[in-house]
Amino acid sequence: MDKRPIGIFDSGLGGLSAVKAALKHMPNENIVYFGDTQRVPYGSRSEETIESFAAEDIAFLEKFNCKLIMAACGTVSSVAVNATSKIKEPFIGVVKPSCKAAVTATRNGRIGVMATAASINSGAYTREIQKLNPSAQVFGVACPVLVSLVENDWIDEDDTITKEIIKRYVSSLLDDGVDTIILGCTHFPHLSSIIQSVVGDDVVLIDSGKEAILEAKRLIEENAMENDEEKGEAHYFVSDKTQNFSNIAKTLLGVDISDKVEYRNITE
Image 1 (tube, one colour):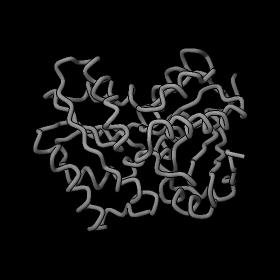
Image 2 (cartoon, rainbow, N blue to C red):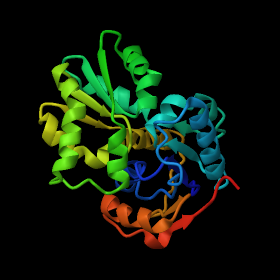
Image 3 (cartoon, rainbow, N blue to C red):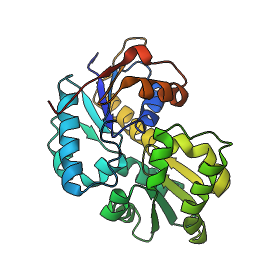
Image 4 (tube, rainbow, N blue to C red):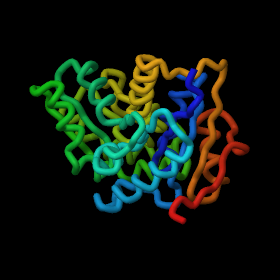
């Protein structure tokens, strides 16, 4: 039995898509989540700033003696190679698992990636996909506004403004004939029902947070690191006020976590 928690971090609320998957697929595992809500978004920052933020996020989680650390952030997974390569614990990002799932899912070899500008500009998704399938074609689109929509709880399926913004972002991918789209920022799966309604049922959406959690589950089981207790506990930390995070998290997770959210200034 390994009761140590899984540490998950993101720039804000987006990584809760990974937490939601963890609660479903690994309900017995303990989780420590950190959302850097004071400094969200990461996707429009310089590589140097992203590396610095990621290093601080990781250092915070390492205080909890985590058995595994996950960057539930497409930007960190794509850009902060120096910071993530220094993690002592087993580490999982979202790029490799989601690319593997996309290569498996695609029927025509034309894969779209919706992510932050930093992730798209890094070329990380393209490199990983073409490593797995050299003949695959990858079409990326930066979708910075979608992060703000999730952070501000504009995720209702009937919200016409959100739908119109998504239509503008995905139109080029549909013109390119993709049959699979990676939601490369973990904020985006919170909008998956709207995105699916726009792209149609013939296009497969890859939830990067979920794929990372499934990879974590495999790694934990292979290394006999499971927590055998009946039900794990999740604790949440944020770098800005807790109320807004708690309110939106209740919608995203479907449970009230207000009594499990704490503020931490990790830069002190």
